[in-house]
Image 1 (cartoon, rainbow, N blue to C red):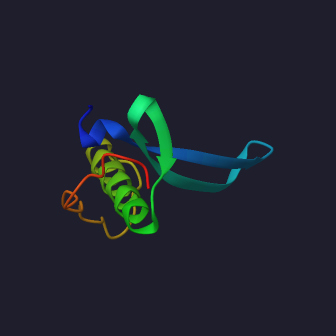
Image 2: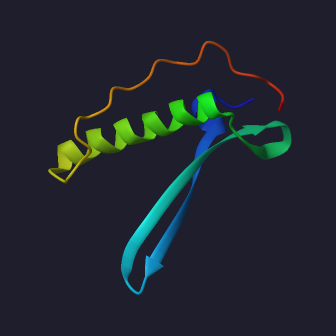
Length: 86
C-alpha cells in the first residue's frame, strides 16, 4: 500500500464571476484499496486542510507572496491510519 501522505488528497471547488474568483472550498479525501477515494471524517478533514494551509503559507513566505495571518503550524502525524473505508 502507499504511504499515508500519498493516500491523502484534496478536492477543490472554485466559483468564478466572469474572471474574478468569488468562492473556493476544499474537501479532503483518503484513498483506500483499489484506488477508491473516500471523503474524510470531520476531524481528519480539518487536519488535512490545516496541513495544506500551512504548507501553502510556507511556500508563499519563500516566494514573497501574500499568506494567511498568522501562519498556522503543521499538525502532527495521525495516531493511526485506517486500512479500510468506514
